[in-house]
Image 1 (cartoon, rainbow, N blue to C red):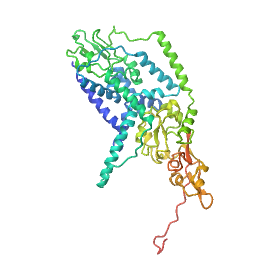
Image 2 (cartoon, rainbow, N blue to C red):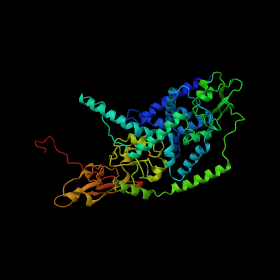
Image 3 (cartoon, helix red, strand yellow):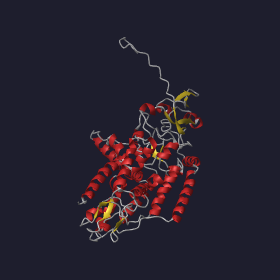
Image 4 (cartoon, rainbow, N blue to C red):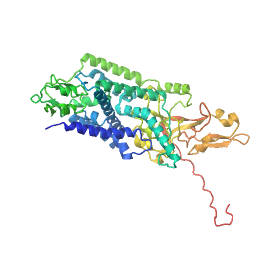
Length: 518
C-alpha cells in the first residue's frame, strides 16, 4: 500500500494549524472566536503539559494526545502541530527552491547536547527557574517572535487603515494602542528567529534535534513507538532518494537504517521513494539505539545539578530592586503579576512567556519583563503601569493563558483580587510641590481607594485606603509626575483579597412631576 499520501495530509494539517496560530498572535481586532483561541495552545506540547500539571483541567488533554500519537507513530507533532516546525519547513523550502541540487545527508545526532539541555531545563524548572525552557521552547518563542517582530507592523497597518477609513466616516476598523517593544524584548526574539532560520536554511530540522526541549522529550518517547519508519530490504533499490529529502537527516540509506528518535515525521521519504521501499512497521532488531558513555552521563549529571543549584538561588529580589532603581520607571521593589496568577511564585514557575496574554491585553499593561523577576523570569510578563492600567472589568489574560500560569477569573472575582497596593509619596505630589490642584489618580481609581482629602489653602491631596485597593495601576498611569510617579503600585508577592468599597448612598429621588424639580 502506497504511503505517499501521508505527506499531503501532513502539509494540509500543518498549514491548518500554522495559519491560525500565527494569526493568534497578530489578532489586533480580536476576530478569532474564543474556542479557537483556547484550542490552538491546547494542542501544543509544553503549554498543555504545564496546564495539566498546574490545574489538571481539559486544557492538558492535548499533552496526553500528543504523547499517545508519539508512542504510536513517532514525532508527528513536530511536523504538523508545532508552528515553529512549519516555519522551519518554509525556510528550508526556500533553500531548496534556490538550489535544486541541494540535498540532505545522514548525520549522527547530537544526543548529548539535546538530551542534556532537556535534563538541564527540567532540573532548573524543578528548582524554580524556567529561564532555559523559556529561551528554547518552540511555541513560546514562535509567539514572542511573532509578537515582537510582526505585530507592530500589523498594528501600524491597522491604525493606518482606520485613519484612512475615518476620513470617509467608516468606522468598522478602529485603531488599537501601539507600543514599541523594549530593546531586549526586540533583540532576543530577533536573535532567536534568525538563528533558527539559518539552521533551517542550511540543515533542515537541526534546531528540532539539537536545542528544542519538546523535540528531546518526544524523541525519548519515540524510541519505544509502536510503529516506525523501516526499510523493506526486498523492495528498496538503494537509490538514496529518501536520505536526500530527509530534513531531520536521520536516514542512512547505505545501511538501510532510520534513527527514528530524530525523525520529525515529515514523510518526505515516502513521497520520494519510487519503489515503496519504506513503510511503517515494528522496530528493526538490529538497529542499535544511540547511547552515551557512562563518563559523559556522570559529567552531564554533575553539570546539570551544579547549574540548577546556581540558578535556583540567584538573588532575584536584589536584582529586581537594582533594575527598578536604575531604569527609573517605578519605585516598586516587588513587581505586580497579572490577576489570576496568584503571585510571583506560582506565576514564574508556570509561565512559558508565550506572550498570548500580552497580545490580548486591551490596555497593553502586560509587558515582557527583563529582570523584574530576576534572571530566571526574563520575558515573563509583568504589569507595566507606565503603559496603561489593568482594566477593572477585563479577564482576557486568564481566559487565554494556555498553561495555568494565569487562572481564569470571573469579573466579580477580578474586582477583589489585590495584585498590589498603591503607595503615595506626598513630598513628590504636584499638590505639594507646585501648590496646585491635580487629583488625576483619584479620578481614575475604579474602587475609590485613592480619594482626596483637605490639604491646605483650600487644596485637596490624595489619600490611599489600601484595604480596598486592588493594585490595578489606574492611579499610577495618569500621574503627571516625572520621571517617577508620586503614586505607584507595590506588588504583592502573593495576591490577596481586597475588601469591597462601601456603597455610596443613592441620591434622593426627585419628583419630576413638580413644577421646579431642581
